[in-house]
Image 1 (cartoon, helix red, strand yellow):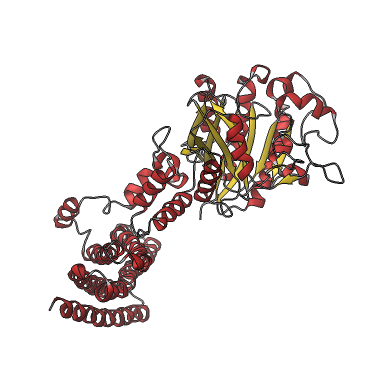
Image 2 (cartoon, rainbow, N blue to C red):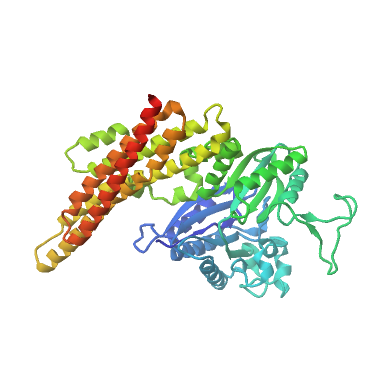
Length: 576
């Protein structure tokens, strides 16, 4: 699996588009792959904020390319941004304020922490910019907290650099003109963080702060007597005693945004496993209501993992006692509407969900050539003189339709009047159908891809003994793969029968015929795929493997026919 990390630097400039564009261009140029194609890093999102005077840039790619791009961005920001003239609503330490490295795929958090430390040292050595290492890259336990590293913000930097206890981890010994211009950078490594603002129906920063203190993990200072004006309580060591908030792994403050004319609770969810996005939303809503306010919507800053919106969508569907066995797109739509993610501006999942942005659209189009077609286009393509798509892809598609019919009956049953107490039962079946449908849909294209591999092997040169041997080996491998793909179609389609049987037996009686059609489609899918297993296996030189694959296919086919008979018996009995 490809090694991928993400970097989400925050730059102290949100108003000058020329400066922002220059920084982003520096990322793109430095992050190009070895061939200069730009394959090394991909800029996923650029999110400037005028009121905060801050821009969040998100890019991802191979660790080496991302680190190089991050260094170039820091250099460009230090060149173009003068912190002596910077003002904005968001706390900040320097021209590049925070520079976190985040593991995405096949990279550990510990590896990112080591990369972050080396990057901080390089920035300090080559650019003369002081760096604090925070979160998992921290050298000191207290500096795991970004707020400790950023304490006093840019204005406190002269005093911090003169204090050995607060001096940066890397950088010049004394405050100088370079530092005065660039400020300091907080370089770290962390897991995925969601930056989110909750919009309030108030203009009061004080009220927004009160809600933030209610919910953030750190909470608020404990006071004697009056909780607002009483004397702050100290412990034996002289430290402020805090009353913890209700949300673990969350940092929050309240502020007023001129751009929107409202106050917000601005939150960083640092552990989405402990506090998912929808839980934070619900708790801020509760805290706001307790203070006579209302959350009118939610603003995602930067990007969000797909699973956060899927979890949220399912959570709100379950609250409504509605089936969660619907498409991914519909679940995300429910999440967007439930949390008001489109309150201030349109929310486009393709531009805000990290997994969607990391996908290469051209590669995806090639990989999903058939399943992206309309029904008519698919039929026309099948009817053409091209040998693919053929019976294998059609079999996989019949299996997909069988699962889709099962999911449909489950969803209709979940929402049937008078069956409200059974919604979860049918929702679980619908989810199962959606998963089966997704798996079989992928096999539609994979079967055609397997056929194409055989054609590529047949097209290999055979002018010498070495070329003939290489061609024969590639052809055997491709044929084995082309035999195993329809066998997978058989196995996955066989799993659909329990869903269809349950829907025929327990589902909405008005849709029992649909369950029957699903069983007919599933049986045809299995038997059609079996024909493809047999014809491809006949070309294998390894007759032992060929015999094993055909025997396994025959056993699945017998089970499918028996399962179909059972479902149809139920269906016909109910129709009669």
